[in-house]
Length: 365
Image 1 (cartoon, rainbow, N blue to C red):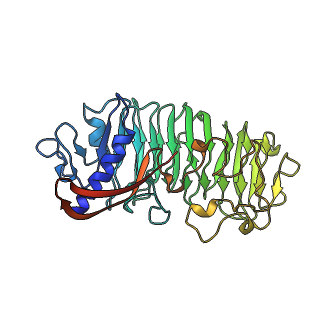
Image 2 (tube, rainbow, N blue to C red):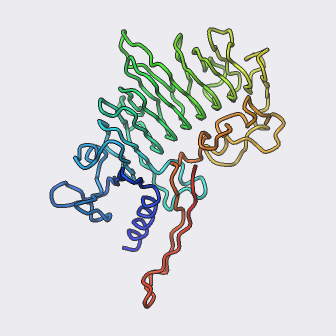
Image 3 (cartoon, one colour):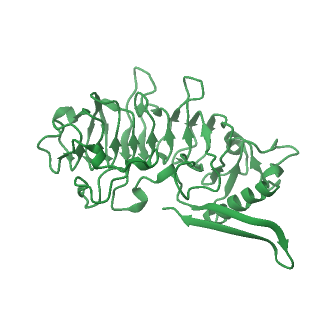
């Protein structure tokens, strides 16, 4: 009972701060007892008016969940069922690497899911702070984008983002791409036409970014740490700047090898981007990055490092750079909502005051 109370206090307070005036925030917890007939997630504080859904699809299919609403996906020891999104929603999970980074959560549970598919009706949706994992099915580990204007933000991706044909405006921002073959994929059809206006900024990418002959409008402020001594990057772009190519011997083919629109990057391989504006060769990346930190914290730059020079906009290079703080990578992929990281109580009610609870929280941009 005490543990459950603390969880409800933490979630309830966060939702209180994040709720909009008209749009609603709905909770989803896959250990809820919700069944849509007689149980409404009461075991996690749900009511008939505001149930705690068990799975994302239950929330999407509920008539009370409207375009513009937010689904708060709570951390769990269980993997969530695959989700198909058919409404314009903001889906926010608790982030990832929660056992590693400080002040990120009052528990250590992330929200894991095999795959999320954005279908007709979900245009302009966002997914934030989820852990997209390989769960034993070859279709797992992806976010499937089948409509325009989808934002994939601050997620951990075990594979990548897979596009339908003829899309517009896809935003891939501030994510952590775990080691895999590639970060973005076609739908596999021979008639595939690539999306217009892909933005790929402020990501930490342990995979390749190969998009041969096709365009990525912006590819800025990323850290690429894919397979060493290989071609990791190949695509056309109007802006490739403030990136760090960390892997030893990594090579790149930008705009057909012309290096047009390439500037202010830091590279581990002396032969990459020679002659481009602001190009820095750093043969010893351990002198540039923090060490003995956390999985994503190790991609922060050391203060005062010799190669920690400003990028094109005057801020530092890499995923944690950029003049606007809201555009920078956030440790553990936390959403831009208040984060409660400590909740404590004596467990004893005081006369005339009730149960005293101490809460520590901070605001995440």
